Image (spheres, rainbow, N blue to C red):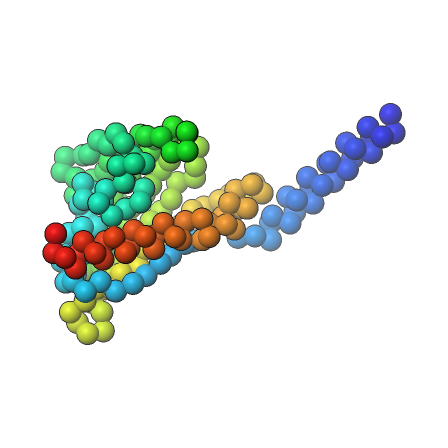
Length: 181
């Protein structure tokens, strides 16, 4: 009986300690990547603002991930959205991406929601590069994690898990914009 009591008290103390330590971690996960695209801002903005073009470069809108996509009419500009469903690692995923702000001179802000995940506020910030011919771009994802330790651990690993996907997406976007497609 003493052994069971000791195990229960130890488990409770470990849980409380884990929760208290998680309070030291930030409650928001931020992942961002940036680059320069040798194309005019209007070309880059055209790719960012039109959700139907995202499957060519955005890793989360790729046909392998989001097999069934339904676009709003029109699929571009503020208020545009697409819903998707598909399979990823034998798990069914569903979600929605909706453009909340769209400005040709500065970029777009969008909201991305997935089943069983926290909503992600995302931004594409664009501005003329130093040479005036290219476009500087920054892709930023922000997720409010709350106070549960398992979400904060996920947030702690967010850059390592999500960063490579952002880099891949920006590289593909750069290729498309610079080729003039």
